[in-house]
Image (cartoon, rainbow, N blue to C red; front, side):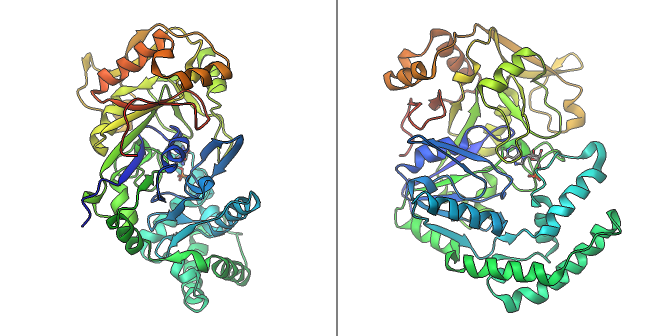
Length: 436
Ligand code: IMP
């Protein structure tokens, strides 16, 4: 068992889109391996490096740096999207150093069909999914008739399993849409071909990763989505279908909890949310429009405008507890420029009393009133000026921004390891060197 301090996990503490892609890329510079352990092509991870903007749905964010990237067993794989991302990287002359778990589950076209139909049938309980088939694929995994990557790369194993799954799913789809049909042979042949193309990447990632960690390799675990979207500890049912938090790492990779040493929580200077569900600090006024524009808050996967609001430290405190967060990273501080005043939600009031812990159930949350502290905003800067500030360091930040950052740390009783003031890799200020 390794007692080397060589693993770090980057967890989004809100509803996703906290800037995990950028921060993973940052840590990947000194890491050996970057691992995705939950979700699939519902994630949108954006990286800006050396004038190129990369957008990944599935491949871990260490790929532009040609690091070893692992898609572990906790993920669900859309092979078509994975092959497209591999191709795109190759077209940019990037070496693709990918390993894919043989026990990850595979998304089929009928999962996407079901995702849409189930959403519609849920009415007011719909989560506003990305319609990438994520939920139905995890459902099949739990029902134990799902199809793994191992099956995908063995056509003789795939055929009978897919025949059974296709029959089961066709019956369910026809409950919603009696005229629905699809051609089994063409799905089978298409996926057989994906299996052939992906075969060389497939290994037992749990064994590989454990050995790598024990030998001292530096590993970054890159979460997808965010703590509040997680299936067990998020705002159910308005979330995703995997454990989008630190608790998902062990199950999603086969790495025991004691080997995951450094837990870093990524939070944004404000909050955003895509899809449905309560959002206590949501803004719908001109301030919201300004933040949305300045933060480019449009979904990477779906293009949907994201809902935005004030930072909610009450639910972030909950995330710090659930994930055992050691340090935080605050991103998109530049995107709040020119907003005055800025507000921080510290707790919720329910029936005249301030709550002690975040209430989790959306039926309670909708009755709560967020309680705010107000701060003076900071002036707008040009992109070049923000880059210059990043080069100069923390002291060069506008005074009111420093007060805001310090107030967040004080309220959370957690120190910031870094702050991010722009989309580029270099627009990052390190306050405390965590690990590597
Ligand atoms: P699904 O993961 O496609 O099933 O969507 C479930 C919920 O999670 C919806 O509200 C989505 O908008 C949200 N969601 C899924 N992936 C992401 C992400 O990467 N960022 C933000 N929200 C996400």
